[in-house]
Image (tube, rainbow, N blue to C red; front, top):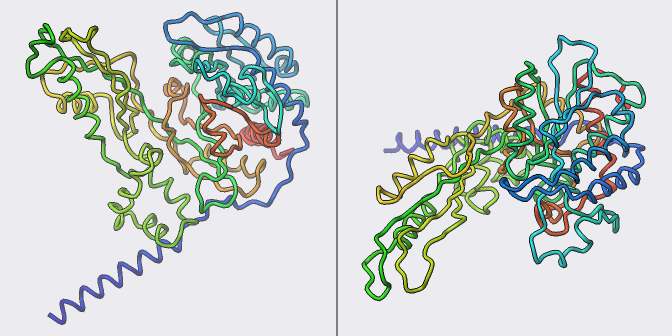
Length: 490
C-alpha cells in the first residue's frame, strides 16, 4: 500500500509540475511594440464626415420591404463628393441598384487581391424609444466627445473609416501592389441577400479569389476583462451560422367548454420547452482554445493554470464558461425560442399552433445536425421545418497565418502595445457570403469603445468616441500599406 500511495503522490507531483510549467510558459496578450503617438489626423473632420453619413436614413426595414432607394443613392453621391481622390483612383460600380463595389488596381496582377467589407444600411429605431435617446438618432450630433446616432457604430463607421484611409493614400499617389476591393452592401441588417450575395456572385463570375477579406465584427473593448489593463482588440476568426426552425402542432379543435387533455398550444409548449431545456453542450475545440491561450497569460493564477491545461481541467473550465450568457454563447450553439403563436379566441380550442426557435450555430455543428436533434427532442407529433434561409458557419481562419499577423502588426502601428486575442463572432456578417471567393476572412472594425457603448449596437444611444477615430483610420491605412509590402508606415 505504501508503494501504491507513493506512486500516486509521484503522479500528482508530476501533473502539478507540468501544469505549473505550462501556465508559466503562456504568452502575453499585449502586443510587443512600443507606445505610439496618436496620428496627426484631423479627427474633427473625420467625425463630421461620420456625422453626415448618420443623417442619411439608409434603413433596412425587413426582407419583404422595398429598399428606400433615395437614401442610398444620396449616400452614394455623398461618398463621391466627400472622397474625391479615392473616387479618382478607384473604379466604382453599383451592384443590384444600391450596393457598391470599388476596385483599386494594383501594380502586380499576379498577386491575389484583398478586400475590405462594410454595409451602408442600418436597423430602424424601435418604436416608442425615440425619446430615450440623448440626441435624436438620425441627427448625427457631435457632443460630449462622441458622434451620436444610428449607424455611428454599425456599420457606417467602417465604411467611413475605410474611405478616410483610402482617400489619404490616394491623395499622396499611393498605388497598392495587388488589387484592393471595397464592397459595401445595402441590406446586411436584413440578411444580405440583395447586397452582399449579389456582390459575391459577381466577383465569383469574374474569377476573383481574395487572399483575405476584413469585415465588421468584434472590436476594441475597454473593460472587457477585468484582468486586462486598458483596451483589448478582439479579432473575429469565425462567425456563427444561422438557422430558424418552425415547430407546428395540430389538433382537431373545438369548444373550450369541453377540452381534451391536450390542445395544439399545450403540445407545442411542451415541445418548445424540451428544445429550450436541452441546450447544446459547451465544448472547447482548437479555435476556442486559441482564444483562451491568447488571454490566459494575464489571468489570475488559478484560472491561468486551468486555461493552460485544458487536457486536465477541461471539465472545470467548461463549467465556468456556462455563465454569463455571452461566454456561454462563445462556446456552444445557442437555442432561443423567439416566436409563439396559437389560437384566435379565448373560447375556441386552436387547431394549430406555431413557434420559431432560432439557433446560432457554432462552427463545430451543422444545420442538418440541429434539425435531426430537434426532431428527436420534440417527437413525431410536432412538425419541424426550416424557416427562411439558413447558413452553415464558415470555417475559422488561421491565427498562425500571415493575414492575422498583418492585423496585429497594423494594430501595433496604430494603437501601440494593446492586448489582442482571436475570438468567435456570435452574430452574422456579410462576410459569410464571400466564403467561396476568399482564402480567409476576419471580422474586426478597429473602433475603441466601452461596454456601455457596445450596448448601443441595435440599441439606444449608439455612439462612437471622436478621439478614437484617428487611430482607427490609421489602422486601415497601415493594413493597406503592409499588405502592399510598403516600408513607409507614415
